[in-house]
Image 1: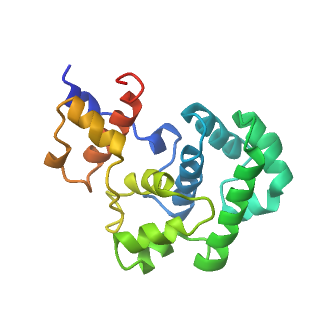
Image 2: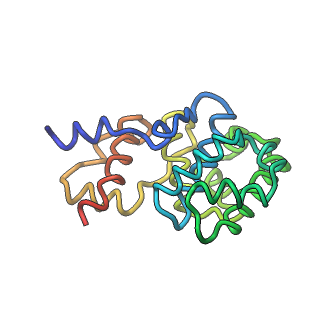
Length: 195
């Protein structure tokens, strides 16, 4: 089978978690939460397990997360997810970001996109969230590229490097398509096997 065909069929990370970020604000928030977890210094497995713990306990809105509070996020959520360090720090980050999202944007990530002037402004508004860095912003926005006109982060350096190693010409595909995003996800998943 051809590598490019395989990459074009790669599962998105949001799909793996059962999230449809293009559907509505609630789904978009779920993807934001997952992106914050994926963007941390933990394994993908722990990030997925932690997101699933949020899901199991029905903590999938900023309001419910804030109501649950720090202690509940640390244990059982983070512990069930597999955190052994940084559980308190990550819980604090998530709580602060939920509060910011509610206070500054009425709880709507789509509102952030709507009021952003352009891609750079959108990225800067997301970077203003507590503990959110360029990797987290990239994770969040790359799967929204086909749906949000202002979501257009550059592919991560590892994606570009792997594409070169595999002779995949990413620039042949429009970045705002699901195909491009699937190829990115596939390349990211291949990163460990190609090092």
